[in-house]
Length: 609
Image 1 (spheres, rainbow, N blue to C red):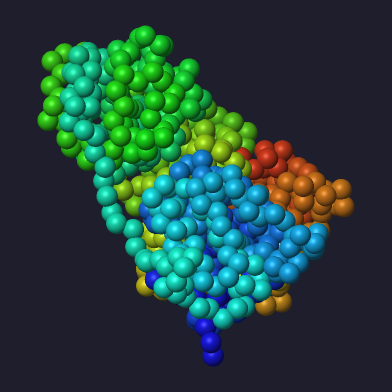
Image 2 (cartoon, rainbow, N blue to C red):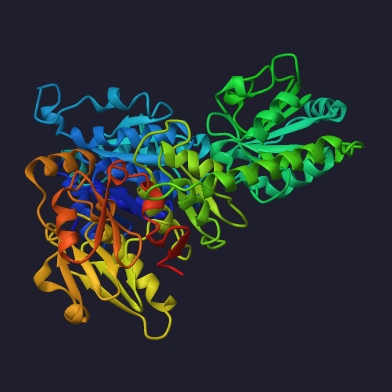
């Protein structure tokens, strides 16, 4: 059988080392789907619920792996749905390649069904490289340039392949006029500033008596160098939101986030400093930086297009953060006066006490800041965290302390809703040996229940088995839903031996045998008006874990708008506490998916202890 263009696309991705493609089905990429079948699912096709989720998963994969994330979608509406996630990647400088289908070439320009001018549509989000393949000989050059450009510029690139082109026999470019051959690979490099610029930067920093450092995601690979720099200069370090995991939050001079979600010590650091050093950050809010004329400033950034932004820097150093700091450190003098540093550490300690008191404030039914604050003692050292936008981002920035090898991220610049869970899914495919808090199972003693339909669950089960303790068992729940789903939306553990199931998504007649002795409660249908309300606020109808939250053996919080649920809970012997709080999903994003059980007020226990 001859090799098709679609076969060559997957083969070339494998040669680039791509292991996963986050995608959603559609007839605009039917030939690619057939090629996946012939290639034994290599690279793996990771199906999401929706193309936007595919793009977010690719972004999460790229953020937490340091590799290129690849997503794919069909033509027209599928390609459109990718855009939000792709803009998230573009604005956070994350390498992502989008492969999208298009209508047949013969139909272009004919106002055909699902025909969209994708080159024009993608020209902004994929401004560094966006091309449509019209003949087989364009490959591999187009795909190679898309991969190489995404890596080199940490940006989004797009390859558009019409459906009929995917089905053509592949023929490589020849050694001929107007043919463009290509080669795999991107050499690694670490640019460094010139000696003259380094000397100027050292002069500015050595002259300062109150030095403030702001780090972003570009400083993540230079943790030891930033710590040495802060010690040498007696400086305090603030973190931009995307740079939260660049340094250990428990260091006494790391004062937390800056800006709208920032801390009081970060504000005082910026208002009191006389020298500012920004490393790998394009923090956008100038009003949270020192007043103009107050501080002399130096910037380090690997991208020459990003220097000189946000603040009137006296010296701009273009280079890799680690290599630049390695060359800069020997030129810096040790701070003689430690008063500034002592003030920073005192302010930071006081702020941490304030946040602890805020989390301890009683609330009905529970203070959400306490939920997040309490996570700090439950999280393992190698956890990968993601957070959604909104209040969850505020709590992530102020309450969570990332330490050791912990990683964390969110939609930093676009600040879009919805990336929390798909980020964690992408992270899990990048690091199968590390916990990522999008837990998709419920634990009851030594029994773990997962749904059969979820792609991530099938992967997670095989990863989880060798880590289970003696006597632990995994039981799969038959699902009515063809698309991936989350077990905690359909299967809620109310008490030992008592479980609440959602018949809309779980086949109650095919529950595991282990539940034969359990009290299985079937959730009632909501009133028609309530059903409409729930569907407005939820992607999949009745999210039980957002409608029911257990407090203790007898009391549960029940979503007020789901009037059938409180009545049913009363019949089952529970004391329902109606609340509007869960309707607005305050435990949403990655924190909702941490599968926490609130046993009593003031105490948190994890199913993953």
